[in-house]
Amino acid sequence: MKIPNREELDAIVKEARISKRLVRDLKYVPEEITHPSERDFLTVTTKSGKEGVFIFNDLIIQFTLDKRRPNAAGRVEAIICDICATWQRGTNSAVLTFKKSSTHTVSYLVCADLDCSLHIRDLTDASRLSRTQLRESITPEGRVVRLQGRLAKIFKELL
Image (tube, rainbow, N blue to C red; front, side):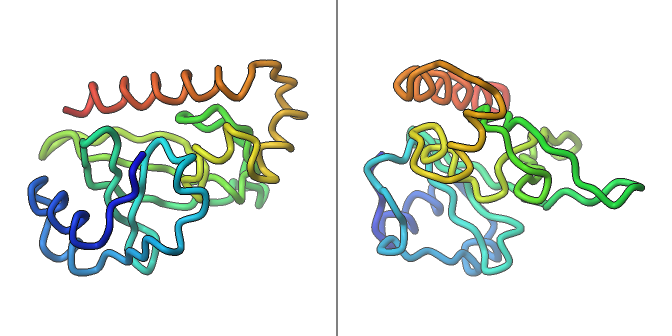
């Protein structure tokens, strides 16, 4: 994915009709994006990290991101990310919610850092831990294909 500069992002967001308040609050510094050539999608969040925009293949949609809360025993259960299939400790997981219509939302359990593109390419500690937990033998190239397929399916459901 080509990482847009600030002006390009502003144009993309304006065209997508994202709320003015959210656009104003987005924190975007392209120079701070690690491994830009390895990204299949881009998320830009507010300073709080609780909401933002998700960009995939020239499509953009607003989202909210909520860290998962502990259960009655005080633990946050581990998950397998719905986007990249990476095993994540409970404290590294979140719920990603997209507004499908004025009355419906769609939510996914995801990696809290939304670095799925890096996880599938074994560029993070979480990815190496996940491979041992899941004993997955698929190649990084196969994981890229799987990730892109899941993203296409998610966006098809939303639009």
